[in-house]
Length: 427
Image 1 (spheres, rainbow, N blue to C red):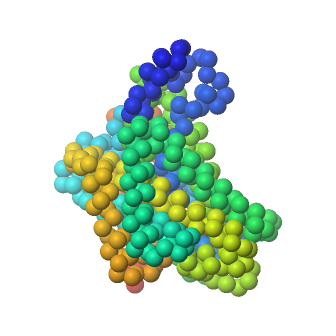
Image 2 (cartoon, rainbow, N blue to C red):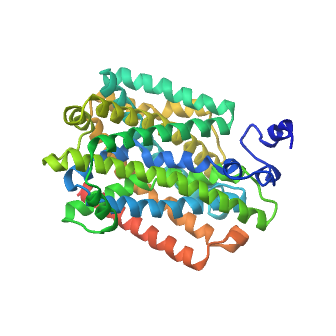
Image 3 (cartoon, rainbow, N blue to C red):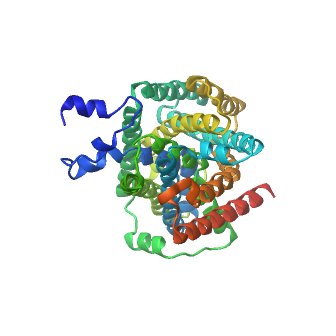
């Protein structure tokens, strides 16, 4: 295939022909490259600032004990995101579009409204996190930091005009930067590797508070908007002409998911490990990100503090852009309406700006946003499992009985734990 033909194989919207994706001369990493990207965009949702708050608290309060919760959450995420990706590949539609086709109009409108509320809560966490990162790094007051965050988020969205592949590459690069920042912090923190290993493989709780925190970790990990978005990212990327091609596409997209989820899981574990090694070891319970930043500087040095602040800033900016894309997907899918992405971005920055102007504690706002997110998980997970379990919808890619049973078990665990989280925080 000539260079010109290869260029033609990749459309401006990121679609790739089956012939180009499965060309015989592709070997090794070249064989995988056409399929890399969608899971990295979805993985950004697993690294938003809400995760920072819950992970730092977990590590400082319980040491390495809750690492197994993150490991289990990420295994759940692999299955959930794979089902979402598979739905897009099998049907050529995203989850909101499939729901609109199979559910009454009233149900579609309800799902759209609740998903928009969830995305606003997501955007709240991400926007405040990015502004807080700027505030901590450069001592910029929160309001000017928020305005800078607005400009940065618009710049990220502008990348879409250059094509989905460019956007995916930039987001993937930002994910890797966050991973490097926390990997460097783990190196500086010098954790107890034996205790780390024990925390990953030993499922244990220590009182009701640890269960509550575990629910918070799970709630901050499994994100409704990532479920909606992933199906959209795969629906027209590489279109299989028959069941055999669709199965092959899904197999390679699964590799993308595993790689992205391993990176996201490693970063979340790194947050807990760092907090355990530096704070729990000294008897410090840190549940405020600004305090965590200060303590990193005092206990390890300014480089550790700066890497933490950069991780928070990059995660906030990248995940806010992904949240905006998810909002576009749910509106178009559930009610066949679409507004300009820049207008959507402008609307969704109003709540976080109002909270910053009101002087609300940023970390507290992040925690509250996770509670709101918890409400939306069931409304994304249940339809996903229902539709991917129907042969009339999925064809040859329908869930196997074992996959379906495991999916419903995960859904039950996620919904029950998030229900527990909501109950304890509200009552």
